[in-house]
Length: 307
Image 1 (cartoon, rainbow, N blue to C red):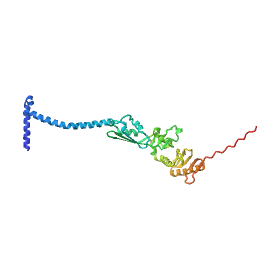
Image 2 (cartoon, rainbow, N blue to C red):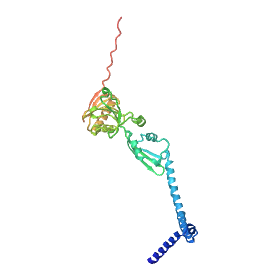
Image 3 (cartoon, one colour):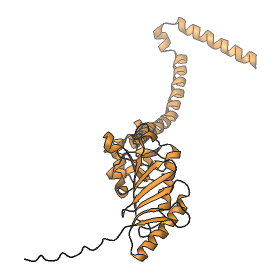
Image 4 (spheres, rainbow, N blue to C red):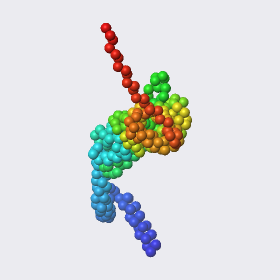
């Protein structure tokens, strides 16, 4: 079989050599050459006939995907906010998205970085879902207290920021934080912080008692314990808080939950007796020291002068 194939191959080569020796005119009208050309033409035609629908399908698929990508509108963006503080429209403003998003040139990582560059946002996640959906999820920072410097009036630094449960500082934005504008103010000692600015995280040992105080006070309604207005930590072990009604409370940084329980009992007793409290020390476990507001003494009536 191998010799027969080789013989036929040699024969074809000799035929091709003979054809090349002919003139162009003779080669054109050569029946052998025409038949061979027809066979080649028929083979390429069949290949093209099969390949054309495949190529057309690929072209249409790519064209459809590109059209979908380029036609992505703002209505195809799914937005999720963990704490519902920042609206979809506000996030679109941060990302500078006004009309449409080009899926073909979408920079997901760049968009995430842009959102997380906002100090009011703790984390952001953006995911593109072909062909026409964009998922945006954000986790906002929750304000628990305002933070100011205790010597702000003297130094002239009146910066006021929010602090979240992690101790991170971020700006006060009324459009985001309208439900937290009555938060208590912690007057921080200047030596406790190098610089008061957004993005700074306060040391855990410094802000732990403040976080525990806010968390424990949330277990009481405003009738039991009025809202906390100001917090000062003059010493490492001591806290002084001022309530909305003006009462000053001395506490220590340990056992805050129990101390608030004693404060609630003292305030309940004062309401029952109709007395107002100027200050109270709830550090003692038994008989907290209470300083009541002295009732105003009636002034003696002035006798009319004799003429």
